[in-house]
Length: 202
Image 1 (spheres, rainbow, N blue to C red):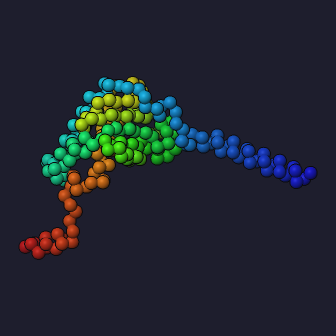
Image 2: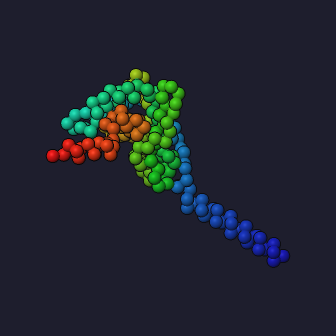
Image 3: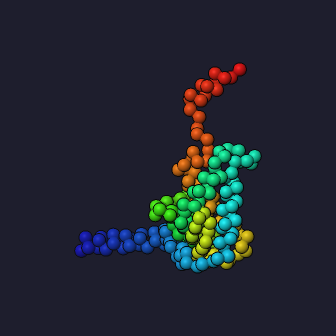
């Protein structure tokens, strides 16, 4: 009898702990909602995306403002963008999740069928605020031709989403920069280069 009562007590404590844990941590768990679905076409965003593409091409062009890039960087940026079929953003744990480090990430699909996933953007997305804007941009020849969203852009002014669009394109280009640094920057100096510089030092 005592053994039976002990099992009942243990079972009650176990169930109670599960219920309390669920109540306390349910908002921190991945919570995909209707706002994680990107199925709303918005052709008015197409030109806005293309404006940000042009802006990022300029930002990756060697000039007084951006002297670190090699002369070929501009054309390499254009050529890279032409390889992209779609760019899609999503929240790591869902747009309504309150879990820490719930950043937006990108899924980039290329024309050859390869896919880059979990591309970092650094853009936080918190369930404590309004759901983040999610985008899917279909591209052709380096330009946006169709844009789908989760509908959040309609909750404010068109100007409010410019940073979101810039983050999308900038992060997509940064992915290639991390993979192909020589397409954007001069090769890193070696010890031989340093030795030669010291030999030439007067």
